[in-house]
Length: 73
Image (cartoon, rainbow, N blue to C red; front, side, top):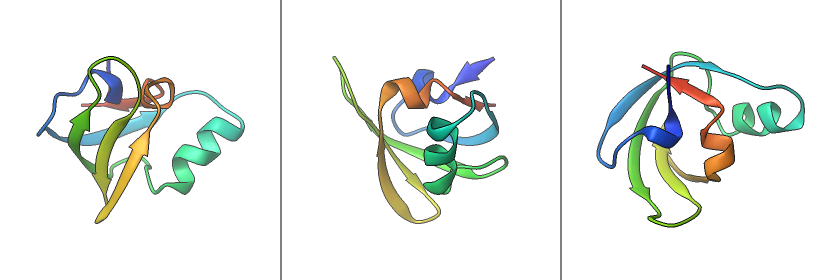
């Protein structure tokens, strides 16, 4: 099981599911990150946050703790 946090820069990935619950899961889903959506990883900060991605044409930044909750294939 691989998560968005482990994705490499330039990789096009698909979301399998979002683990976790409560407000953090809701925040991730409100960004448009849902099961089956394609995500392009644009940039990963070398030491800390964020993971920058493109989802549905929008450029987003995710904290690495949030990216850990997104399971990818």
